[in-house]
Structure formats: C-alpha cells, structure tokens
Image 1: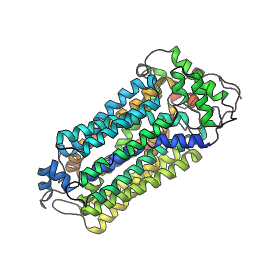
Image 2: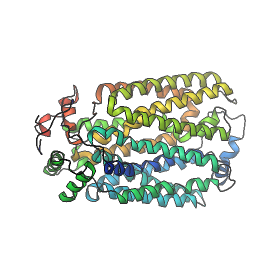
Image 3: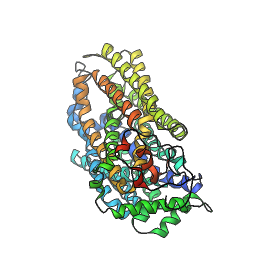
Image 4: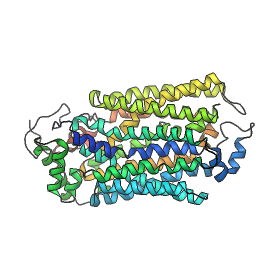
Length: 507
C-alpha cells in the first residue's frame, strides 16, 4: 500500500487506528445534523396532511369524504392530490441528487451540503406562506432539491471523515438525526393541531430551523481530505486529515492511500456513472440499486409518512394518532442508538438478521389482526388497535436497528473513490424516486390490498434478509480506501473485483 507499513485487520484490510478526537466528533455531528431536515419533513408531512385546517384550505373535498362513516376505512384517505403533496418532494429530491452527484467533484461535499440546506430553508418559508396548492407544491419542490443535495453529500462526508473503527457509529448519526427530526416534527404537529386555521403554517414554517442548523454546521466544518485531493488541494487535504485525527498522530499511511486512490481515479478519466457500469464495479452497482429498493420494500417509508392517518384508520382519534406517531419517533431513536453502538462491535450482518426476523414477525401479526378486526364501515376494537400500535413500535425499532441505520452506513462506506459520487448518488436518487412512487401509491394500494399490504411487505423482508446475509460483505473496521480487499475476498463478488487493483498490502 502507498504510504508505508501498517497492520492488517481481520478482513484483510489495513488498520490505520484512528483515535476518537474532539474535532472529528464535532465535525461529524455538525455534518450529520443534516439528517434533521429529512426526519422533520417526513414527520410534518404525515401530521399536517391529517389536520382539518390544512385539509379545509387545500383539500376540502377529501375532508367531506372522511366524515362519511360508511366509507371503507381502508380507502377513506385515498386521494391523489393529497399524496402529491408528500410525493412531489421526493420526485425533485431524485433530481437534486443526480445534479449533486455531477457537481460534487468540482465543488466538494461541504458546498453541496450548504446548497442543499439553503434550498430547504427557502422551500420551508414558501410552504409556510402558501396561498394555494400550486404554491404549496413549489415549496415542496424546493424542499426536495434540498434533500437531494444533502442526502447525496452527507453520508459520504461522514464516511470519509470518520476513523475506520468508529465509522459505523458516526454514519449512524445521520439516521439518528433523521429520527430526532421525525420526533420533533410530531411533537410540533401535536401542539399546532390545536391552533385553528394557521397551525399547519407553523408546522411547515418551522422546517426552516433544522435547515438553518444544517447550513450553519456545513459552513463551519472543513471539507473531506478525499474531496480536497480530488480538487488538487493537497496541503489543505493533509491539514484537514491531521486536524480530525489529532495532533501528533501519524497520518502518512492514510493520506498516502487517499492519494493513491485519487491517482487511480485520474488515470481512468471515464465518467463515474459510466465507470460504475463496468464489470469490475458490478458489486457496487448492485449495492447502489439493491439497498434503496429493499429499504422501500420494508414498508417503513409509507408507515412513517402516513402513520397518523394509519392510526386513525384503525380507530384512534386525531390526538391519539399524533401521539402514536410520537411514540414511533422515540422507538426510532432507541433503535438507531442501539445500532450505532452495536455495528462497530458486532458487525453489520447481525443487525440485518435480528432486524429482518423481528420486522417479518410484526408485519405478519399486523396482517392477521387487521384481516380479522378491520373491515368495511368499521373501526378496529380498541384493544386490537393498541396491539397494532405496539407491533408498529417494535417494527419501527427493528427497522432503525437494521436497514434504517445500515442503509446510510454501508452504501456510504463501500464505494471506491472513483465511483463514490456515482454510487452514493444512484442510491439516494433511487431511494427518493421510490419514495415518490410509494408515497403516491400507498394509499391506493392500502385501499386495494387492504390488510394484504402487510403480507406484501413481509414477503419482501424474507428476500432482503437473505440478500443481506449472503451478498453484503462484512465491513466492520475496514478503511474506506481498502474496501476492495473485502469484495475481492467475498465468495461471490471476488469473481468481479480483483485484489491487485487496490495495491499490495504489507504487514
């Protein structure tokens, strides 16, 4: 390896060590705060779309429909205009991600995060002032572009700045902030739902607060060494690496590998998106596609979007439905914290196995309860409704423990530098695109499949858990620029990735 002699960890990759210093903790937490805008919007969208004052102004026809007791409870909220309010953000988020992937090499991760936070800030103010549905959708478009930019840059930033042995915990700070944002949004919805006429404006406008936090944090932190080297700023890159690793720490080996990876990138001038299609990058392309597809097929995305509506469907009142969403937020935070502690100690695969088993059990149980106790023109008995709430909470915590945290961790850490922007961009863009499809289609799917929607997601949980256990390599403690060693030694991916491509390691 370039940069000197060092030890190999158990995965056959170099171990740089890496102390947990104050600068790296502060830098990564400030970057991870961008997750607040993701979580806040998910929570606010579901809660606001359930407020009568909001429905009265923008969707008066739907408000009248929901008051008809004879309406099928699975179909009472099936309105394409209402779901467009949520889903429009994710369509433009996909566009934002693809644009950010194209320009991040030229302007850096830090600049992309600043731009993303700024667009989200403007979009939140437009939404708060919305006078009609068109203005509301324009605000959602700006929010989506902001999410796309920040979602593309932030996980990669965290992966590139974190010490290898702590990387999983640091990247999981991003989904942790998503969960915190979701919880805060539902607490705000719970309070603003009591404000007649303009409570929804306050909920939407307060999205400017996490956006401002993100912009401020991104302005104050340094860019990543890899990003600086890509732009020819070698002295700044070395200084940035030394700052986060600590004074007196020998960074020669790690910096040498960053230089070697970037030099390999420059020798192959083919664009990152074309390069990732080549055979030797096949594992990374598969991961970039599989992770967002499976994430959406857990069913948690639509549950988070529409949890207040879902709880009203099964029999809770408006306040109780919002309180149920708050409880879900607390369970998300608990699952993310537990995952952050466990993944760097026990590895990623254990989290996939436990989370998959629990989520499958919860989906099957919810299908059984809904199938026998929820039907046309009726609401679920209170005891069974509480059971669904408990199962939803366990499902939410299990998701946060597994796919919720690992979706951001593994794609953020596995890509070689020459396809890193394309890999992360593809994963986030596809995720936001699938968010759009699911947000637009879920209520119609719920109306059509009824309780069978839970069975649908349960079947996919079996598939994705098998995929994770068989085809996702264990990446615990492996330095970013040595991920190729792990894939080269994998029982299946080794036929695509050749170890010599990444240099010769020394012991």
